[in-house]
Amino acid sequence: MTSHKRINTTEWRKATELTIARGAPCVSLHAQDMRALLDELDATHEARKEAQAGAIKAIAERNRAHIEFHQKYRKAIDAYVEPVACTCPSGDGSLRWPCPTHPPESVA
Picture 1 (cartoon, rainbow, N blue to C red):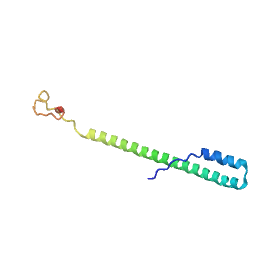
Picture 2: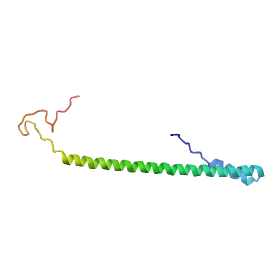
Picture 3: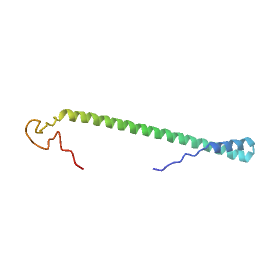
Picture 4: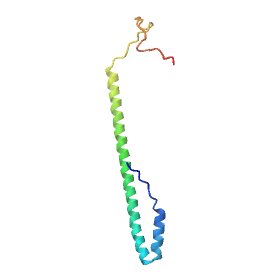
């Protein structure tokens, strides 16, 4: 994807309007063409900005829907899976170790 740098048309517009105001016929005609070009540049910039905002909004909505799906999925899994029973010596007396509920802490 190509990066487009925003052209600041403010200074160009000031110079163009000054040239038109001075009234030299051939230069003024060129300045009027420049005004049209600057209008086109500004319109293109605004269209690109609106398209980017729309794309960002669409991505955010997809991400939100994706997160909601995974939250519902996780709740469904949690509701389906039975809790792991404690087998610690003080638990049900089975003396199995390591206990699936209370695994040993890593010594790192």
